[in-house]
Image (spheres, rainbow, N blue to C red):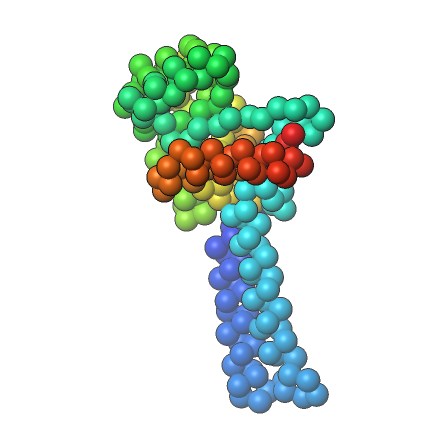
Length: 228
Ligand SMILES: [Zn+2]
């Protein structure tokens, strides 16, 4: 147990128990003098819990371990990444646009999709795009146990490797969620965690103009954040 890296859920469970005990002590007027230390402990624990959670869900945080979320700061480059595919016919339409502008991107495949659409997966890889894993079923890794997380990674790597002929070396956890155990297991499977610095939120279907504004606005108005 102690050899296993901590889970966020475990830390939050401990924090919740601590908060409840502290609030109870305060309510029962135990530890109330001279300045209500139990209540102060409860508030401090809530703040620590919030901090630990934010660092597990914010894409650019390296609090639990290194993640890649932007490229070189000195070169004027952006890295385009697309998640959740392959989803024919849309992913293949995207390939035509990328080819038209001679742009290479990185696609983070869901293993199940690569398994369902191996031809599409292969076509994307053959066009010279980089392929990463986005787990096998797109599950929230914070809610899975160690064996399930390891299987999500290993199975996706296997089916993507079978479809494309190349074993992926990059992993984007679904929603970017990770904790110490997720990072440890990714390391064991030789997968580097890749996050992002700008998000289009295109799945909310806001329209192409809004999507372009989000990407271009954030990239060009806040260049440091965007890896320019
Ligand atoms: Zn996703």
